[in-house]
Image (cartoon, rainbow, N blue to C red):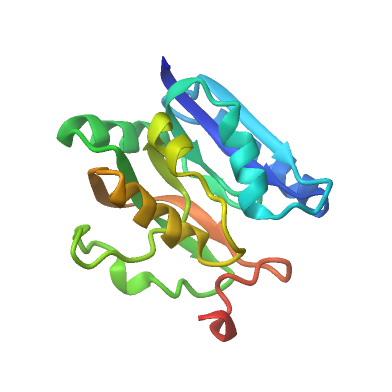
Length: 184
């Protein structure tokens, strides 16, 4: 793996406008620019896990930073997460979102340090060592893949660290069901 960070963005055709006006511009506005961007659009209805795996397979940098096509990074997202990873030797770093248009069902975890003995959802907007992410992958049933991925990284020996800073925006809208109370 070469040094650097690749932004990985799985997408679906109905969100191409959000990808173009929200996700990609936020990646390009980073104070620490990414070294590559891998976007895969799910035109075959393969699902989020397969699409994320396909985008991840194309990564050749040391670090992968995930972003969903309907969300956005704040300008210092990559810089802050890389700094946190390097500062403590982490393999997986997650910050926290500003939630827009809905409710974050995991808000009670904000600022709580990661505990290997009591793992919890982190969302998928994380910075992770690419070789680790590619080894763990996202295969499996739809739903719960964020936690399944974190647990897979933990089982592979990852050092997971929470950066208690809001570095991205998690948007809820009619085509995003993850923050709806009936999905908790």
